[in-house]
Length: 335
Image (spheres, rainbow, N blue to C red):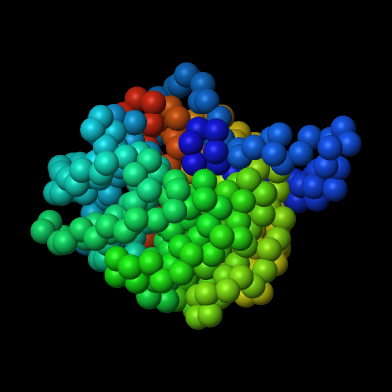
């Protein structure tokens, strides 16, 4: 998403979204009027960020940690490129030029490829974490915002085309054009893919065995991203509604909604401890919620760098990395 094209979620938001949809043009504010939610413009820092901070490159946005190779991947600009770096020293192990803007990164599998959707190039790149691995590229519909992998597919959420595209190797297998404006996408290896629709304020599930849609549910006042927690749950940030919404994956069903003031935006999850981490762009903070049980509970909160748009985590939630998009920095917090 561009800075004007993201998403958000809430319990009250779910009701609000339904009401707004019914109001149409009779005085209420429609989804079209609201548009996709955006991260807040972060305030100036009021104190020192926790952990350590280092320069990484211009406007870092998009970060992921791979435990199998103990490497960190981050997307930067001027010029646009993907950096694969040491997670402690930030020494560059691989630098790959990308002809266009990148906002989000995922890894296809432990030790596999970094999935790099280039929004302005309408291309999805698969970049091996190994230094000399061959980069695959696939043309996809307009403005791929996020990409994920599951059941042998790489899956692209094509934001401005309103579609989700299934890829094998570097070849498109199928494109489903049944979304309004997909933002975050996630998938597992048990037949499920889910797209967060930032234009329609919904989450939509797909069966990756039949490549068909299975369900669609409300997702608050302006959802932006989703993440699988490793215990059959999906967490979605409601950036506009200041909530973290939880769903079961099979079947797709809302199970909880957590009040998280501060424009939650960046999102990751540790699938070992089942802790969900979200950045609060309106407060320059990152918070963690344990969702392993029936009742989510807050377990940590840290001060971050300015404009903390994306976050990555190591297994066991032992280390967090946060991008400071405005200042070109990366923050590391050891717990």
